[in-house]
Length: 249
Image 1 (cartoon, rainbow, N blue to C red):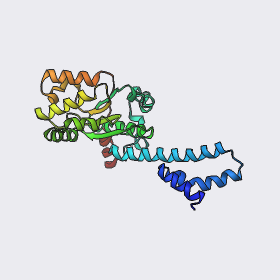
Image 2 (image 1 turned 90 degrees about the vertical axis):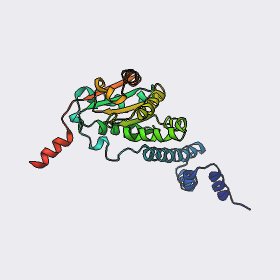
Image 3 (image 1 turned 135 degrees about the vertical axis):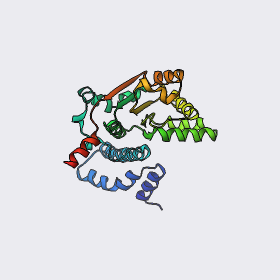
Image 4 (image 1 turned 45 degrees about the horizontal axis):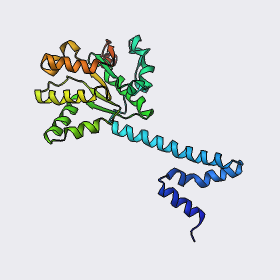
C-alpha cells in the first residue's frame, strides 16, 4: 500500500510543483514546531513554489533577451546623464510604458552611452517579469530577410510579438538595400501600437532618409516610431574617449 508521503510526492509531481515536493516535509516540521494553522502551512509552501517559479521565469527571460550581461545600472555612471533624462529614469524602469506600447528612442554620438542605458533599462524590466529582446539593427534585418525568403515572415513577426519590448541597437548603422528596408519597415509597422520598441541611433531624424531611401517611407517610419514615444538626447562626450584619455595620462 502506498504511503501518504509517497502519494503526496506523486501528486506534486503530477501537478508540476517541484519546490513544494522538495520542501513540504521541512516546512511541515516547522509548522508543527511553531503551531501553524493549516492555512499558514499551505501559504508558506505555496509562497516557496511561487518564488522559485518567479526566479526561474526571470532567468529564462534573461537568457532569451540576449542582453549584454555587463550593461546594467551597476556599472553605468548616471552622473553623466543630462538632468532631464536622469530625473526620468524611474518612470522608464517601472515598465508602465510597455503597457501602453510606447517607444524609447535614444540619440547621441558614438560612445555616449545609448546602448548601455537602454540595456540597463532592459535588465530592470526583466526583473519585473517583462520579456525583452536585444538585437542589432543589422541582425534583425537579416533575420527578417531570411524569414521572408523562406515564406515565414508572418511566423517570424509573431515570434517577435511575444516580447514586451525589442531593443534595436544602431538603427541605420548599416546601409540597407531596398529589400532590407522593406522588411525593416514591415517590422516597425507590425509593432506599431502593439509592442514597444527601444531604439538607439547616431543619426538624427533629419537624416533618416539615408536609412529608408525615399521620403514617403522615411516619413511613415518616423511617424510610427515617434507616435507614443519618449526621446532621450544623450548630448554628452564619448565615455570610451574619456576612458581612453584617462588611461593615457
